[in-house]
Image 1 (cartoon, rainbow, N blue to C red):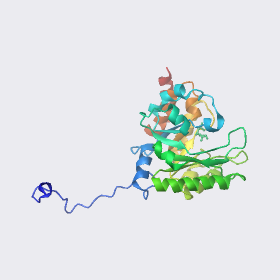
Image 2: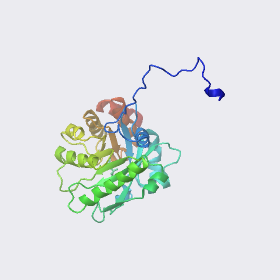
Image 3: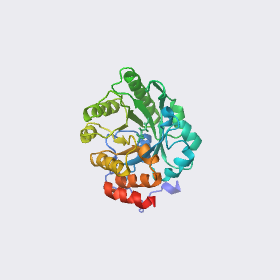
Image 4: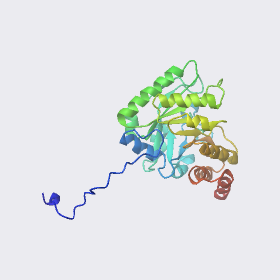
Length: 289
Ligand code: 5RP
């Protein structure tokens, strides 16, 4: 009992109310500790944003340009990313266990580009736990006549497992070829993901993007899409961040750049440091020398 004996030096902080902690990500205040801990590994608490490096393309496309040898193209970029979005195959075979990065695990899988996309199932949550995933990413094919219901069911099942084990779910909006890529469509897709349990939504930038963000109660990250000239890709990042995105989940515009390490650092400058696209491009050129 020596250590708990009353004496005059003890400080109980009488009269000082315990401060509430709040949370830095929208829609996440009421989540459990493990969820918040994992989200804080993906999104930097200092900026509330993330640079997620996406290299999961091979799970439907095989050896995509720039991803033929993940060990050579992706491993050198890992230090510059906040989070890595990848399949469990590339995670286990290529990503060093010492990288210390938050893993956004590609959690749904099914058909490849050789057949009809989006006919997917989800993994076993135990495998997400085994690899210490910070999020589970599930494709949702909004507006797809054949697979919308099935992929929403995948999201619901993932979110159920996520709430059980404390792992956030990321809804990845897959755009069908016949869908109009506008704020009405992306706004609906993002909102449906969030309403069904997604803690993060990945979607695309579009005209009127601020409406998509504001109508979505959880953080949105944007995919980069097909390779653009670097300045245009940085403009895309800048506009998305300016209109409320909580970061990027970018692949081809990084790993297909002639200078991928320079590009991811320029993207990070725009996302975290408030660089303008021009400043980001200057940084890219400087680091490309
Ligand atoms: C593929 C994906 C990609 O991770 C996503 O599209 C981001 O990559 P990119 O910036 O190349 O579009 O979800 O299924």
